[in-house]
Length: 274
Image (cartoon, rainbow, N blue to C red; front, side):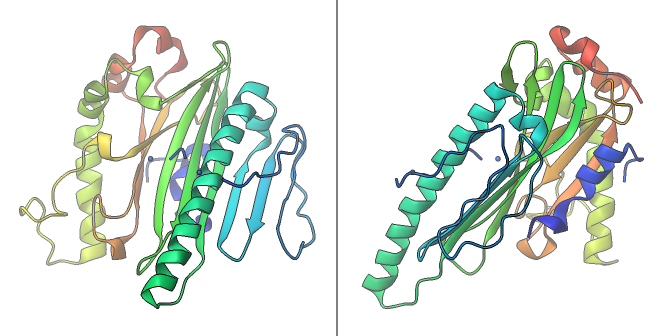
């Protein structure tokens, strides 16, 4: 389910031209962050090898399916691995509790129970001097007609040993929004027209016809040169820019002078134009 939404990540990693989820009660096994591990309830399939430092968890019970993974670049930073492991535990425990409630509700109302699930896949976006940028794709099902899909992101400040929201590296979310608004709106309308056909009228006042604020998206910081952040990814989940059937919208933009002006002083050296 994760593979269908990686265009933006590939663009950020490869340096090509332009084209939200932290979560309880049963314990989960906690392998060392220094070794890749696969955990399953029953029956145990053959383990999939993962690089040293990476972590991959898969647990399936009668009530739920839980999967969580992060790459070696994160696992080899002890403080970051601890943070991601704490998110893993909270997310798994919350899913287990929701699944119990879901099964009881199904029984009480006389309808079949469909197993709940959540899958979170963290991947590296950019590993530059001083910072590690990561993104997560999150798919879940907790009842209803279909599942849900969303994104998450963070930037690890290696010197300060803290996790940052990408927006925290700018003077304000509004400043970043202003720097990206014009190209984002233009590309969004072009992509909507491709998906909806010639009859689509931009800015017609419809629910999914207006531009999207960055506050309703997930921001990724990428690097084509491997030394500075020189591109910004924007991921838009279902029901934000369009109906469920249209899926997600994902764009990549180069860092421009406007973007550089919006970067807050402590992080100026981490950004550059491509």
